[in-house]
Length: 186
Ligand code: IMP
Image (cartoon, rainbow, N blue to C red):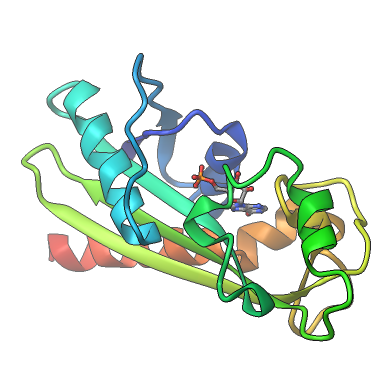
């Protein structure tokens, strides 16, 4: 399977390749970027995929991926605004949770794949956890130094890329997408 990922994020590309080693995935970087005006991860993933489809070769399968972190004590924020609510993701989320006992949070990932004929497939993944009191670890990106997945005592940045390829919200969505594609082709 060859797909183009409508994204400028090399970390997302690396993680999708790790999760789907038999797929050939390349970034599709377009001159203009779509406006991520959706209210849900699914809407924004679709906006990215549809925008990428307009710029891609006619025979290409194009994926849009939208992801972020939902924090319980913040009513689910930053959610779809995870990339843009601040430039200092880790520091500002720790500050926002200062004094909170409830530190539950989850990563969410939505992927929409658009076929050359315009048909769509969608897939979803989540990773539940709590926000650590301070950053730890050096792998991954974004909020990884402060998310401690349920059932572990390490942050995602400490657990590392190989752990993410197995367990992350993105890996789960990627594998669900592969299953949906296999079912659609039957
Ligand atoms: P997007 O490019 O609009 O989907 O932004 C996603 C944002 O959510 C990223 O900039 C990160 O801050 C955060 N995010 C999504 N997935 C992950 C992850 O796997 N680890 C850490 N942060 C993530």
